[in-house]
Structure formats: structure tokens, C-alpha cells
Image (cartoon, rainbow, N blue to C red; front, side, top):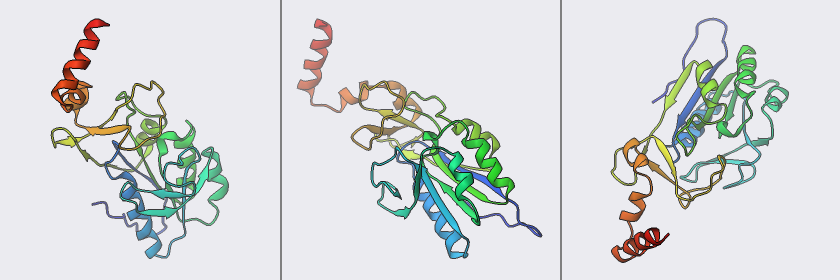
Length: 211
């Protein structure tokens, strides 16, 4: 479990990143850290990308339905405008932000602000997602959390998309994505077919042959 660092003398800012696949508890951990900062009587502001309206337009909500109020913003430059007098800034779904997010987080850290960002490190193709790799590179503290593979029970590191939509950004939940380990992720839709009744499997296999 992550414990907040303590510095002697003048407090300095830093960047923490919580990353992992879908359903790994990233937002849950973000909320936990932000609540601890509030208990310490620090002024906390939370932000999320305006496009993320899956649960609520103005709340950061975990898959377990825990939530904390936030401010939706379109561009990471707004962080610089809204950070006056703030001790801690929380950022959810960091992968959906623009490429300037890492630089803007560094500017905030140089002001003495603690930044806590949570986001997917990989997209559904298994590639680095948006600004996350550059944000990870400049962070002082990185926590990689894991989901459980829904097929074999091992630690899951990948977000497997159940639909054929090729777009990188597709908002969805358990009806759209599965958490999978490396092996099950690379097995692809073979696992989907195994989970279906035998008759349906044969029917789909026949359709593929005819095609």
C-alpha cells in the first residue's frame, strides 16, 4: 500500500501515477489517497476529462461505486488555471487527456503541488495509451495495480475489447471490456468461443468456413 512521503523542511511537489488495466482498482486507489489528503486538512481538487460521462458528468466514480466530486475539463492547460491555493490535485482517466498533460503536471509539481494521476497504461491493442508513457517517465512514484483475469484467475494486465470497434477511445464497462492476463489476451476471441454453448460454437465455425 502506498504511503505518503514526508520531507523535512520546505515541502516540495511531486507526481504520483496509478496505472493498470481496466477493473484493476486505479480509481479506487486514487479516491483513497485523495480522501487521506482531505483528512490531513489539505486543499484538494479533482479533475477528469470532459468526455468521460460513463457514471456521472461531475463525479469520479470507481467500478465499486465509490465516488468523489470532480471538475470535468477539456484540456490539461485548465489545471494551471484552477490550481491556485491547492495542495493536492487528483486526475482520473489520465489516458484521455492531451499530450501536454505531463508537462503541465511538471509545472504544477514545481509550484509545490502534489499530483496524483490514475489511468490506463495500455489501450485495447496493448499499446501505450495517450500521454501515459510520458507521464510515467516524469513521475516520482508509480503504482501498477492489477485486475484478475476473468478466464484463468491470474493477474490481469491487459484490457481486452469484446467488440470489433477499431477506435482507440471507446467508453465502456464490463459489457465492452474484459481484464485478461498476457496469455489469455493474446488468445483473443478463441476464449469467447469456448465460453459459448457447443451448438453455437459449431454454428459460428460453420459460418466462418462458408465465408
